[in-house]
Length: 402
Image 1: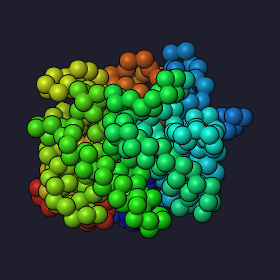
Image 2: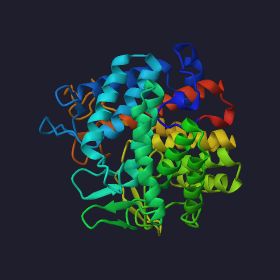
Image 3: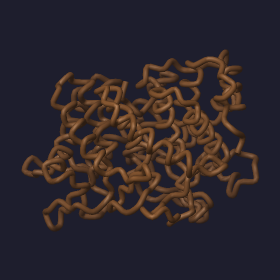
């Protein structure tokens, strides 16, 4: 119910071609077109997998036609394969996701028994362990456990959760510096991912301690919201789209779990901030400062459909159609930035580019990576399956064409 990997986690049935008229009535896009895109993107992602290392390559650099070595993309990319596996039952997708997650564990997770920050996840080669990565790793292992039944994944999810508990003990610190051996207060405050991770563990284990910890993080989150409704979660100074979807979703989850209207009020306030700042093409600039200035006009494309998923959950809680209209426009944005073969998109004839998604929009460095693809594909799937479950839309619910 509180999962974020696949529409299955929300107990949604996969939409089918028979529901195409419903999907088209909501979005103006046929089911066949959407399926063509997420299948193409999943084939693209599989081409990024290195069988020898058992991991996804890092960024693909289209200009040089080279792959970077495997890195943190292996934290996110398995989620796309799990979502596709849920839809099609292809065991190869599940096995590839498992192999990628296994590689990530042994290269990025602190596992030494003597470490007091066991379970923490580092960011590439920097001497820092981050709650934002650790919470995602916790959720990835929960997803693997529910799909395989292998207890090692529940063990690793608990291991990661232990690091998040230590963060809470140290004033909800966003990261641990392994060089200086100390927790640091400045950084990316990813409380939304922590709440999602703890509620997921509560669902899996029925252990109320995880529910209590999720609520504690939620109470802390309420103190962080600015008067304008936004969360400026980078050093409490900057909004970034990478830290937008999970806080919004987490607040709705906490409302659903506790019935406490404060959480829904905070979620609605944050959702309305997004609606006030959404561009006509369905996207948001990457960064704002706390005075409301746009810091970076470039878009992090994959963040946009992830925010769309969060807006769907807010719509589910409120039934206020403005949220579903905004969510539909995030999917239209996804479609507009996918490298559709045969189009005039740069490097569309390169098989390592076709059907992928650029890391930045407009094109900053002409790189692609699996984490971008994963967010776009899951956004399309969540929206398609959720709209299918609603049936024909009311007249005021159809999104405005960008």
